[in-house]
Structure formats: structure tokens, C-alpha cells
Image 1: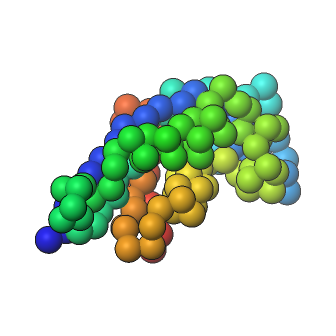
Image 2: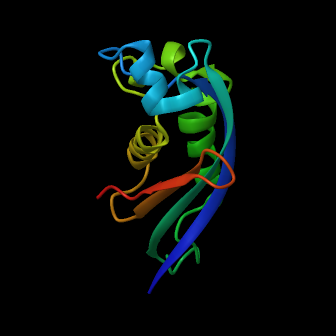
Amino acid sequence: MKVTVNRKAHFNAAHRLYNPKWTDEKNREIFGKCSNPNYHGHNYELIVSVRGDIDPDTGFVMNLDDLRKIIEVEVEDYLDHKNLNLDIVDFQNLNPTAENIVIIIYNRIRAKLENHLDLKVTLFETPRNFVEYSGD
């Protein structure tokens, strides 16, 4: 029987949505105020969902304290209070859209989980705008 366990987390980060191949005018047309050359910030909210069979010995899908530690290192320590464009290697050549951020987060967490567990990451950029990624 498969069960999904969830852990919420958050981080704060700044970014600029920008395509260097375009003029500043085209970037403003496509990305609006999110293309501000001086960057802007978000209070990101995150839900990490891990799905799997319940271990008969522990009663857990996975130990939630282990998941907390993975999120702390792979997401919060890595992204919190950073300028995504300037401080994070993953975004040196990748526009830090919510879509790209959630994939980076997913890949970092996925690498730390056992293979038999399924993962879905939901990232809220604002209270109304969010993206989900489950590796498909």
C-alpha cells in the first residue's frame, strides 16, 4: 500500500528573469517587472511529497526527520537569502523561473532519496502562483 508523506519548507531568494539574447525592452515586454535589472525577491514556500510503501518495521514511508535534513541542506542552505542569478551555479546559464527552480530542487532532493521512493516537489513563488514537478 503506497502512502505519501509531505514536508513543508521555505526560503527567501532574489532573482531576475532575463534572456541575455534579448534587448532590455523585449525582456521587459516578456517578463515585466520580474526583469528588473536590480532584481526582486520572493518568499518561496515548498512542499516536498515522498510516496512509497510503508516499512513494516518502522511504520514509515521514510523518516520525516531524514527528509527535514535533506531539505535543509539541499534547498534551504543552498538557496535561502541568495541571489539566484549571481550566487547559484545552476542558474549561471539558466533563467531562474519557478519552473526551472522546481526542477533544480527536485534533482537535488531526488539524489538523496532511496530509489524506490517517488518524489513530487511543489514550489509556491507567490500565494497564488505555484509549480509542481515529479520528474516526468
